[in-house]
Length: 426
Image (cartoon, rainbow, N blue to C red):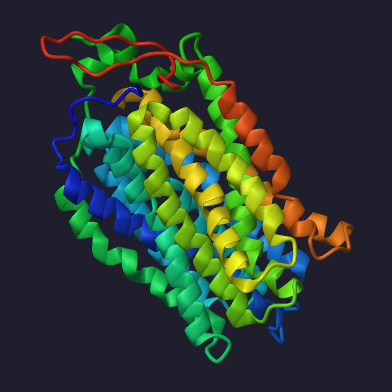
């Protein structure tokens, strides 16, 4: 069976924690996918001279800030607790989106997207760790997965808002909705505990020397016990985020290149994110039955199959279905990888492990939009952008397959427990 983090260590109830995490990541998903939704409007801007390559650069600038946010917030969350870093990250994200709405030049707009990326990068490890620690052990993957579907739901909201308001509205108006996170700061301060601690099921009945040395978290992750899984998680996250951020920036434009108008491309974007929501929940249910590794591998493979299907002429219902499967293969896969990382580490390392996994993996987010842009420029076929996603999808499946099976079970009645450096998988 897969391990679970054991009894919740934060004192939070699963329901409110999942709900708060879902809302935060929904707003974050909106902030992430907004660039793809306004892409056609940016290309038509009369003064900014935006090209496809510029759009890819803007996506990469957003992603460039994410490693800084992920690593800093993950480390701070383990050291100071989840509450303060989460509140500060929400304020940062709101102000950055306000800056995008007010930007008068392309250079300033690009700078605000970099700052937005820092806020996005910070919140994902903090929210994942917080919900993971509050989750019911028997439903750990499902509850963490439910919260992470907020990213895809935010993408759906972006697609709907973009279809309703564009191109009649100034695209910068859509960024004003990104100020909403400010209202969540008091909720975070009330619900999120100020500190977290390891449960005995995760560290043993007494704190170990390693647990007491809080300054050596990265050293622990790269030590003999965790090194193999750490490096594989980093590489798998890189592959997954190439798909996620390449698709978030380019999916609407790829559909336009294949002969669909703006409203149709946004419908495909909505289907993409709806597939991520449904697929993630279904995969999380399966993962809670001891099949987290298998579920993650299959989701990577589904991303490759779906992108190949999207590249070929198909009846509209089949294309919408393929877009939904692609959404699960992209966003759903990364959600499973994050759940896997949370499973594999105790509370004292969970935020740092997630932060570095997402931080190092963000190199894939940085490369993803520009990688897809380069492929579409170098290869004249309108299908080239879809083909570009197949390689990282297959690589991600291989990397997850290389994870060793191990065992770290939660506390049993009477206090028995066992540990190893990677989660149990089938």
